[in-house]
Length: 104
Ligand SMILES: [Zn+2]
Image 1 (spheres, rainbow, N blue to C red):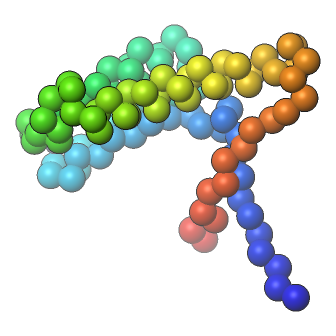
Image 2: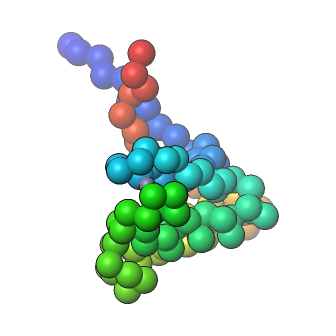
């Protein structure tokens, strides 16, 4: 018999979003946990070029990949807000995401 350890995180464990430019290695972080700082994450999700070196990441606002990122962030906020109220609204469920084990 083999044992396999699985690692899960809850939506409330997601604290931030980070973009790292592959050209200049600049990292831009935005909070996902702080509701008042979510606007920064939405702004970051709409970026099509690096604000530091100007490298174009996507062709424009209508690029399907940019739209998918914006939608993902929007759905993440929406689902996190809903899940935070599951107990108050009688929903007997919690949602977790399985992740790769942390590197030791
Ligand atoms: Zn850059």
